[in-house]
Each structure stands twice: as C-alpha cells, then as structure tokens.
Length: 344
View 1 (cartoon, rainbow, N blue to C red):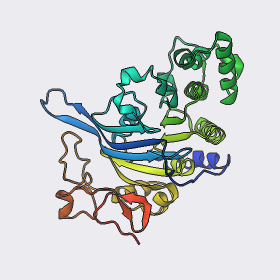
View 2 (view 1 turned 180 degrees about the vertical axis):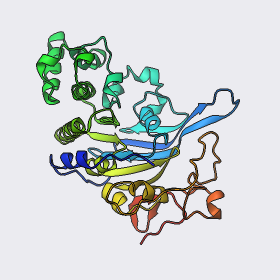
View 3 (view 1 turned 135 degrees about the horizontal axis):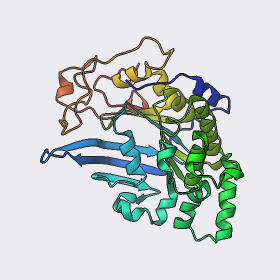
View 4 (view 1 turned 90 degrees about the vertical axis):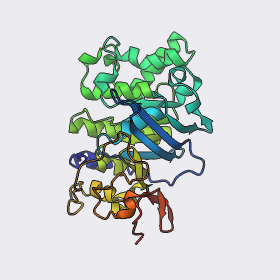
C-alpha cells in the first residue's frame, strides 16, 4: 500500500492558510479524453505494458487536482504525457480547446504552447543541470521561449528568486552548493519563469526532509493563490493532497478508479481500492489490507476489473465486464469505477 508520512507536514501547511475547494469549472483549461500509453515489452513480440489505460480527466481554471495511487500505477507516466514529454499511444489532450496530442513531443518543446504548461519534477537534484548555476537554470526557459533582452532576462530572474524566497546571493551557486530546499526553489522558479497557466507537480517534495517539505509546500500553496494557477499535484502524502487540492483522482494499474471533491473522497471513499488507500492514513480507522498480488500491466484483459482478485467485494461480473466511472447517486461530481457502489 502507498506509504503515507506522518501528518506533521500537512499540519504545517494548514497553518499557512485554508485550502481551496472550488468546484470543477464548466470550461476546463485541460481536458484529457481516452488517453492511453503503451510501451513495447523487450523480448516479448507483440506484447506491451499498459502504463496509462483509457484515462479521461478535466482540470478547471484555477483548480488544483490531486493524483494519488501506489507506486507503479501510472501517475508519473500520465503527468509526462500531459506535460508533453512523451507522446500518447491513443487519446487527446485538449488545452484551451487545442489538441496538443497532435503536436509531437519533440516539436512541442519549442512550440508556443510550451510556456502554458510547466512541470516541477520529483527530485530537484536530478532535474537540475550540474553545470548550470541557479541563475542559468532559471533563465534557461526565458532564453528558449521568450524574446527578452539580456537585461530584461536578468531582471526577471531576480524577481523570480525573490518570489520563491531564494536569496540573491545564491543565484551564482551550482546545484551541489545548494541545500535540498534551495534546489527545490530553483526548480519552482524555473517552472514559473514563462508564466504558465498549468503547473504539474510530480512528487515535488518527495526527496526532501520533512521539515523542508512543509516550507516548500507552504510556498507552493501561496504561489498558487497569488498567481491563480491551475495545478495537477501528484503525491504519496495523502494528508497534503487532501489539504492542497480541490479534487482528487485515484489511479490503479493505469486507470482512474475514483474522482471527486477531495474532502468527499477522503471522508467517504467509494471504490474498494480508495477505501484501502485512505485507511492507510493514521487516524482514519481500521486499516484495510487488500489480499493477493497486483495484476500485471502487460497485456491486461480489456474486460476484467483491474482490482479483480484482490477486491473484498468482487463478484463474477468483475471478471467479465470492466466497470466504468459513474456518478455516485445524484452526485455527478463524485464518480467511481465499481459495479457495486453504495451511494448511501
């Protein structure tokens, strides 16, 4: 089951201001339709690993959406598809109505749309060029995607450093001369440099000490509120996801099995997998442990529920028919992919 750190970080973040919990926008900034990503399996002719399997998801303007699930469920692959670092096998990625999946990933890197979607990576050490100073790193997207003069570029770098709380005297240091928290601030400043409208955060604090995590998460919360950013927030820390997001999507073996307002999903999870995931949070009641092993993502049967064989309420129909996301009772904003959802 997904590892959930203590609530110390979440508590610290909560003191920095109330989390936003707006509803889904009727005109989303990002709409994902039937997205698939399959990787060929070496040595197995014709076989493929289904990393992302038929995912549809909306992100509203100014909305923060959380993405949670066990390691290996496809979260990182999905965010790299949305950031256009990889090409999808099938499906569409609509940003402001434009189908970005029609633009190959290599060409997207230099397209005008690159500025609109930026990403903060999981490990700031791995994502920073060791030969670049902090100043060079923050300035890099400005050089590639804008026509600013050298003077304007440096002025922007100074402003960004101040915005993320990075002291000016650190701008000429290399990554090995910076602490984990300082490197995280450099990565955030780089992502904000070209004024994106959607910020994708892939486990942005996973590589940091707990005390540093709280500071960086407070910074991200403040920036989101100040800049009105739309965000996709991937994290293993369910307490932090609950506090920092408006809605949450739960992934299991490449598919979204539940999506809804964050508080509703955490208070009243409906999918059996979500119930087990939420029960891993300390203080959430008795721990639910799923039996059996996670099924292989290589050539999975298209008509079998991904949780089949581990689900405590599974029946014969689960082996014959893939459950689709459907509304829970009259609540169209809260949906789960299970044949046996109890709306009560």
